[in-house]
Amino acid sequence: LDWILNNQKEEGFWGESDSNGVPTIDSLPATLASMVALKKWNVGDTNIKKGLAFVHENAEMLLKEKQHFLPRWFAIVFPAMVELAQETGFDVADNLNGVLSHAFYKRQQILKMDGLVDNYHYRPLLSYLEALPSTSDIDRQVIVKQLSEDGSLFQSPSATAYAFVATKDRKCKEYLQSLVRRCPHGVPPMYPMDEEIVKLCLVNQILVLGLAEYFKEEIEDILSNVFRSYKKQGLQGTNLNFIPAKIYKDSLAFRLLRMHGYNVTPWSFCWFIHHEDILAHIENNSGYFMSAMFNVYRATDLTFSGEYELEEARSFSRKLLEKNMMLRNEEDDLVMITNFQTLVKHELHLPWIARMDHLDHRFWIEANNADSLWVAKASLYRLSCLHNDKLMKLAVENYKFRQSIYQNELEEVKRWSKDWCLSDMGFGREKTTYC
Picture (cartoon, one colour):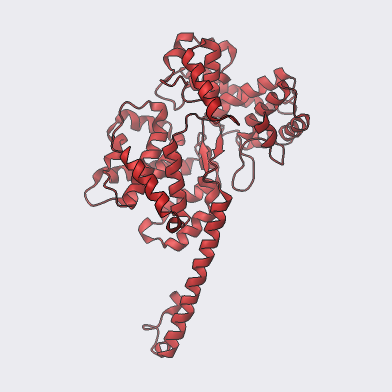
C-alpha cells in the first residue's frame, strides 16, 4: 500500500509512460488495480480520486488508439480489472461502452479458442489465472501440474497467489513467503528475476553510453562470473514460456563475452536455430520476441568467417524484425514505442562496423528510455538499474568532455595545416573540413 501511495504519477495514473511522457496502455489496468487495493484497505482517498479522474479523462482515448491493436494480454487482463473495479463500487464504464465492448469481445474470443496450456501461444491462458473469469472453472490438478519447482505458476506472483487460493499447495505458499521476504516494499511483475540478465543489461548499458573506461573492474567481474556459469549450452529442456528470456540472455551474453575476448561458440545462443518447434513458436508469437530478436541480430555483428549458425540466426532475426516493424504487431508493446522503433531501424540500416563510437554513444544516450523498458506478463516496467539519472548524467558529461577534446584537436589540425601551407596545396591534400 505504501508503494501504491508513493508511486502514483502526477497525472493520476500508475504504470509506465513512453519516451514522450504519454501513458502506455498498461496504465489503465494498473490504475484500476491500484484504486481497488486502496479502496479495499480504506486508504488514499485523494489518490483514488486522481486515479478515477485519469481513467475518465484518458481511457477512451487510449483504448481508441489501440482498438485495432489490442495486445492479447490486455484483452485478458483489462476486462477483469474493469469487472473488479465495478464490484468494488467504481463507475469506470461511463461513456466507454463502445470501446469496452470491443475489449470484452476479444477476451471472449481468446477464452473460446485458446487452450489453458498450449504450445502455440506465448504465455498460455493459465499464466493469467488471476484474471480469468470465475466461469472458467479450472480443475485444481491442471494448476498443480503447471507449478514450477519453486512453487510458482509461470514465475508470476499474481497468478501464484491465485493458485495458492485455489489449491492450498504448500510450495505456492513457500514461494509467496520467499517473495515477501525478498521484496518487502512491493511485488515485482516476475519473481525470481534472473539476476544475470539484469547484470548483463547493466554492462550493456554502460558500454553503449560510452562509460566502459570508468567501470573496467566491475565489467570484468560480472563477465567472468557469467562466463563460468555460461558453459552449459543448449536448450536443456527449457519450458517454451521461458524461451524469450533465455534467447535474450544468451545472445546478450554472447555479444558481451566475445567483445571482451572470451572464447564463446555460436551454439551458446544459436541453439534455437535447429529446433523447428521453437522456430515455429517464435514466428507464431513474433511480437513477444522483438527484444530477443533485436539482441540476436546485434550479437551476430560479431560473426567470424565460417560461422554459418550466426549467419542463419542473423537472417532469421532480421526477417522477424522487419516483418514486425512493417506490420506494427499488436502483441508487441515495444514496437509501439517510437524510441524502440528507432533502435531497430538504426541496427538494420547502419552496419555496426561502419559506425563511429562517439556518435553511436550519443545515439544511445538520446534513445536511452526505450531500452530500459522491460516487457512483463501484462505490462511494461522500467529496470531501475538502467533508468538511472546519475548514469545518464555521467554519460552526457562524458560525451561533452570528449566533444570538447575533439574540437580542440580539430583547431590544432587546422593551425598545423595552415602553418605548413597544406591549405595552399589544393583539395586533394587538405581535408580538415571532414574532421
